[in-house]
Length: 256
Image 1: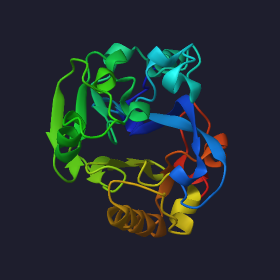
Image 2: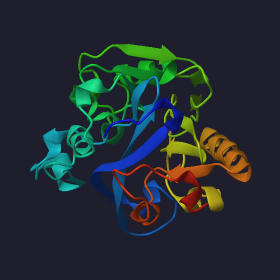
Image 3: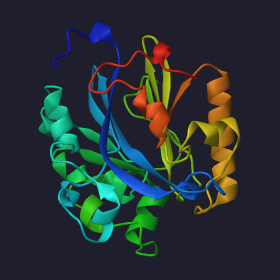
């Protein structure tokens, strides 16, 4: 992939980098059964540089059959570096990794982008490094790259096209990103909005760092959607079945 010119504006590409099978209640409280969901990642191609939002699972899970390997499906060639190479992008060109949060299905591929600076909310960094929550595995996210801790909204390129904003609830420092392209605005929700039904019905998960904060973040997304933004739900397999991967996304074609 090569950018033709800066007039192309911001380009957005989507990938899945592994799957995990969890109880449905983990995403929608009270729902029975289990569901296999994707770990979703994005390349943001801005005229001033390349950024990745979330990096999926680590390739350390490839072929693993014990422990977490029983619920994580990480085929060979599905890690973020290989996904980028499929698109013709050298992983070493990535300047920024925006982690929605530091759980293993969102920061597991950080090490594969060796020249990137990791952008994370300060509260998330402090909580993840604190060792209080077993869902954080420093082997996945504390891999030598520099961290840039931000607090609140952060305009990555200074032109309003890629804006990080807090969406706490799932974790104390969860963040999402507003990406404005030439044909619309996308909101990369991460785990503040797992499923379309999470937002349509204000249906919370069965547990979180703060369910009250979860609801507040969903209300923020509801306002953005009402104003015309397209929400990219964090783990919705039906939604993701309709998202073309490794192709420049046309935001206006994504279903509300």
